[in-house]
Image 1 (cartoon, one colour):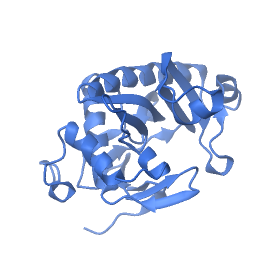
Image 2: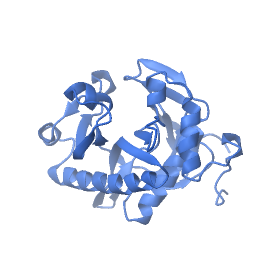
Image 3: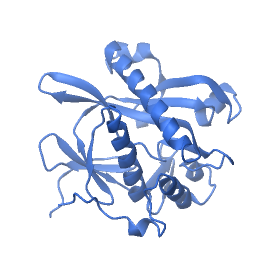
Image 4: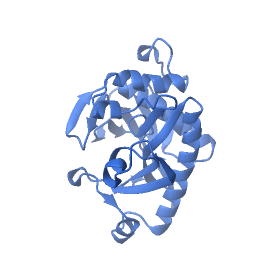
Length: 254
């Protein structure tokens, strides 16, 4: 089948027009970036693993009633998603001090936070995705007060579920980034989880050793990046012991 028209290319994914109205095809790349694309590289098999991990988490979220843009996985690197109006915010949920929070506030990395903290960042690569307050968001019309209420409620539900999911396989969900979109059905609109949930967008530490199992291994030149992503997939039960090459397409593939 001929490749569909490309609509957008980001740092980690490409979007193509979908086979049906209101759908898109999301392609996961092996490209890796850090520090607002100042550092670039390739993590072999990352796209395949992130596709599978994100599919698994999105499906599980759907089972508990969290709305997402995910429809189904198409093959090793692509999934069918609903077309949404992306809200220009990165929503970061923090459970443990790490990364930018540790640097910004002088809190030792690994410190358990008194409660989960939600931060908002304006999605703009040229500006370095600056941190913003709710007042900025509502004043500039990026999202309404009701939108933010829905976003916060969904973010906390995702955090509760994913914290338990990962803890069950010996992984600590330190923090993670979410994106949201407006899904329109005629005149009705609802906020849904969009983008992806994967080791690219989460900080994941081994519960016993605090070994990093996420993109920080790439950011900090820790090595064994591919192995860390594979370990997350293996613990979630979605990676055959033989590795990435054995990943098959979904049973529903036409």
